[in-house]
Image (tube, rainbow, N blue to C red; front, side):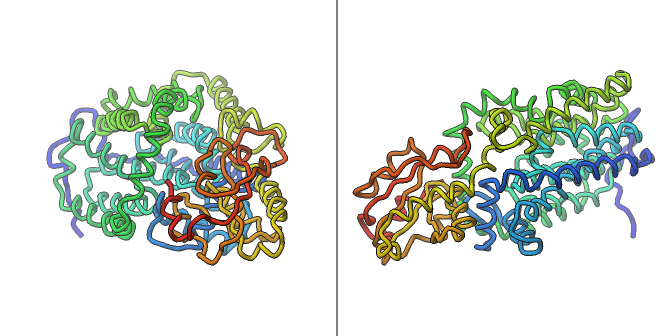
Length: 503
């Protein structure tokens, strides 16, 4: 087969095109990956399921080509993992551990693609493995867990395309984009940023290849099932994104830079800053200068739309991989080792469940995902206590309705052990899974945030039974819930349901 050459002009002075790469630091990187996998596995069963994990498990039991707030890949992974390994946090998080390890290896490969020697690759892997965001996403199965890996993989493949000028890499990029779109439509932000940066900073001649439209077609075909589903359902994920921007946009903008610093580590700021500068100025990797441009474009988009800071972190990990070489050349080895060690200790405490739940208040103040893993079995027990206040003859017609998908999904997981029935919710895809039958005309047990008075106003004869008791003095969403016992729904559930739907 003849390899198509899309770079028809000679490289500029200092540019690396098809030169050999440094040898891969397989041994040190394997050691870093093994230690990381061991740490994540050892801690995977602590605290318990995250509210999103509980939701993914329920979504996996309702297989579809899409959901209100996400494409199907993460719920599919949750279903496969629990079906094969069991319905436990450990089993569910095996996938997250593997994706986290793959993320660290990919960062090392990016450093190598940019000319990093074995030492540079090893340091890049250590920095990635000890970053708060990588540790946090490696502990939980979240849409962002796969997203982080997919963005970095596409970045690696793009660097390989730019370095070699071989247009066939567009095919691999297309596959990665298509699969990534089946996990999160946010992938489009990366594609737009990279393509716009390529047009602005070059090298534009890599676009002159028949493999570009072929790769784009491959991406479209793989992403098509979810895109078709989304179009048929009115693009609900756009509505969810708009809701995030409307409710949290100002806070996201104001906290953007502080969170960027914390979510990797303040210690790593000089490394990714040096990487952005190197990617722009170093003549030996001039072909990669679109990445700092793409990073600033993505920052602008996220700030304008009020998106979350972690959307930018994969490109900062690329910059960090690029910045290791100049920092490692300047810093003395003991200083570099000490800096990574300090970052590791701090980030492990912030991102992973190393402290007992009773002492989780400190990491939870910095990383709210910690608190969302604590108190779910106790929550189900608290709801069961409220349910038992309903006279037994009325329970067959009674309904449990939760404001949030997390509480509804927790009852699905822990409720049967307390004799609780299925819980309903109008939140996200729970609304699509249907209302209670109209024959369920008995009492309604409402579970909602204490500040939400609108929900109870949809029902009649409501009385407060009390706050949810999780057994922990912790600032998390489940601890903010109250339980009310109301009379029967004022109109049939099928009539009331559109009013209760929310994103």
